[in-house]
Length: 425
Image: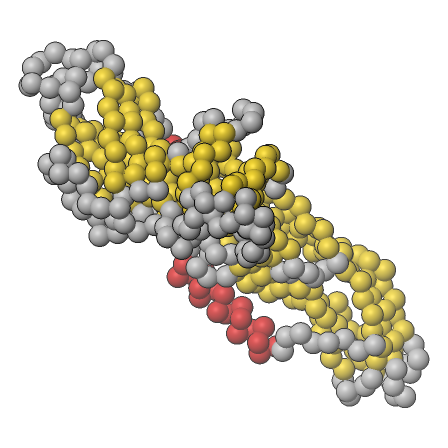
């Protein structure tokens, strides 16, 4: 059996050069990342084990980076490959011939989170074998690669890794064989390959976003499909303090949504307000900021569905600004199917459907709603009566903190399920 050459030498060479160029342009230097964060850098790694026969297509998932944990600075994907390979080569021609064997390995990773798919190729020569007609050489499985690392680092475009839920990666390794002969002789060839791959995702983040000591709490909760309740408490407010709410679409670049003077130390006095002061503000994501916020600067993207990020900034006279950790909410949109609020949730959720629940063949029930854990386990199921466009789902038990999913589907009319996620803290 002849081997199939999956890649020509020219294709392999050009793809490798292209990968090097992309990597140079795309990867920021570690020193630039650390300079933004000082000595407050930390890492968090998720990994999984993939075993196969040298090739295949695997779906790998890891949690997204939560803005509550700090400011994400860079992301590193890595595959550590251990590959064993064995083969049998036989001269199937009528003349003596010399056969040269090359074995290559291609690592391919793609994901919606990656602006450029990762690809890398490495080759290794297994030597030249001179065989008379009918002779063969047999090599039992041996270690061809031992913890061979492929790494893709992302520093400049990490917004797609931030949020709630999971990140999905398509991992497609290929092990191939390329055989050359000195006189184009025929041969029979068979091979076996087994690989063990540690696939990992490492977040490098800045711990400077920890909740400042002056804040007792800071939350952002989706109250309905278009408004977010921002709440915080503060102690030891300095005279003249000014609070500013900032909003962002990518978790990296923030715009001012408005500012106002602190109430606890208002009036320009010299004393510090030690008692806790509570604040709340409802941000209407479907329109410009409230006119009550005198310095409001409307964002051009207000009213656009998707993830929204908020942080609180406060400034005391003569001092540098202080920032809270970043909070994220997700605003639904018409055509998406369903929206969930409040989010984060506690003991219940409200589900808003784009279209009212149509009556089924029995005229009574037509829509099923499932609450699923992040690993796909069914937590609870509920059948909804026809006609409802907004429903409240009370949790039947206390849900552990984490990410959950809602799946809603029509029972009689068919169609694709509608899904959305929510967070329980």
